[in-house]
Length: 230
Image 1: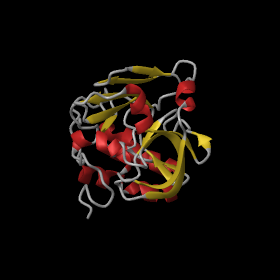
Image 2: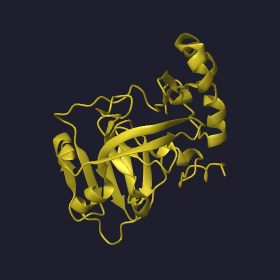
Image 3: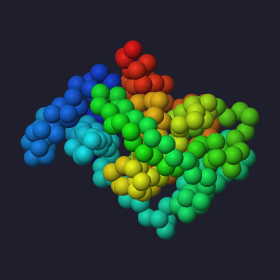
Image 4: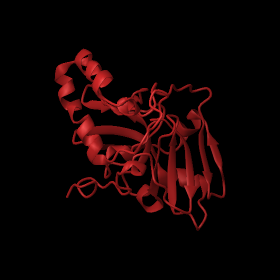
């Protein structure tokens, strides 16, 4: 979120961000031209990238546009840190791992949801079985190609039955807008945990604060039980 035309970036908590993006819902009715004019003239430059852009059923957020592009020939998923077997997986390697499928709802902390999203990908228990975390391991940090976006889960959270590293959505490979080639899916938590464009997972002996937690969001983002809800 640091932009050259705004030399004094500052943290924005959940309440301020909700006030900012609350107009995103009505932007679907205003249309792109009006929304773009409002975003350009009324929103601080340091937050324009975090505004939602209208798309069918979803609102797409970025913090450092443009969105990363995926090249299957060169992309690698690094798994490192407090593991016995650091790994560098190609896209083909990722697809060859045990496949999991599920249907789950997606909830954004700003108040909108998408029901019944069909995901396919790899359970973290299968990724971690390959990397072999050390006994001191407590957390996983998920790094995005969209730097500086990062978020984390505790080891226990990553092993819940419906958490996964997804590479398909609604029976198709992830699109660029939805984080191709791989994104974190954690249905029990709000969407800011769903790191897109994942290219690195770091296992550590702590649970690190993510991009939005550093700006006032809750570390444990349970739907209905965090960030002022519930």
